[in-house]
Image 1 (cartoon, one colour):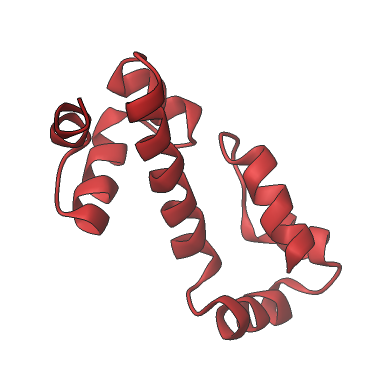
Image 2 (image 1 turned 180 degrees about the vertical axis):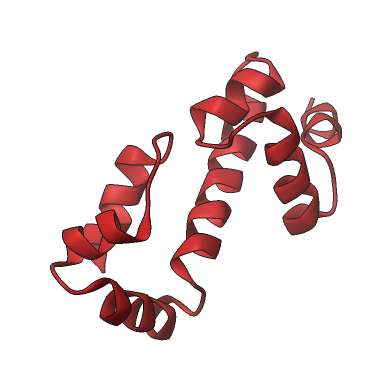
Length: 102
């Protein structure tokens, strides 16, 4: 799992799919998905989304990049995609979060 988590941290802004992560772990996709959820407590997709939102939070505070640039940099399709997940997970929008940190 440590290798998978390190891979996610390094490649977060890229397209990451289940088969890639299973390959990093060296096991089948089905076995990986089961083991990952059992070990981490969430599915690989939810884990990736959480990590992307966490990285977006850091970037919102530490950079002056636009929301669209941050969304792409952390691996979301566009600003709206980031905003939906950000709001769902944190209860606030990226813009409101940024304003509250200043």
